[in-house]
Length: 221
Image 1 (tube, rainbow, N blue to C red):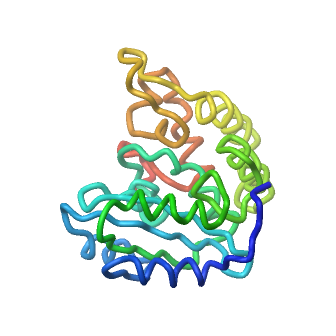
Image 2: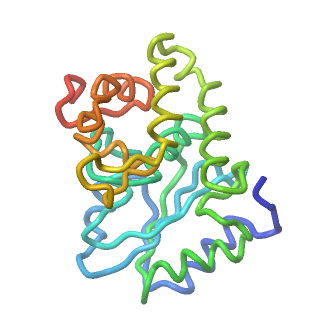
């Protein structure tokens, strides 16, 4: 289990406000889009459950919106993001309270590491069980399977998602034509990749279980 300490999420937010040039607090995709500017670096802080101090953080640039790629505010899958599946499960397990987006004065990765050091964790997740990425994802998946959303899925979809989770999501897949291109964790949901590795039949399963849709889906609104 991640080692707890006395640092609260409020203290982390206070620290980030002091060490960045500006910020917004929102759960609106368009507000985030307007705030981003090309050439700038940002650190985001996602608060899933304030009372239980469950939150995540990461970095992004003005030209690469990782909040968008996570699909937590927009169900249409796009691009690559390794934390996407974890975030989508977290949203079903804990809900989504708010997102802070901080504009950094320098490299956002420096602040990202500072938070990990202050909280004494090895990943950019706090409040979840696990000493490494695989353990955190597996524990989160076990909680996800207890949600009404998951329980109400068909048995066939549950079985196929289990295959996806362990064989593909945790399987650290690579592009079959170019092994240098990795599709670890949530990167595997980049549109077109499952088809490339002959698992296109899992796309509607993933849409149902994770409540998202692919670019060519009939579920598009």
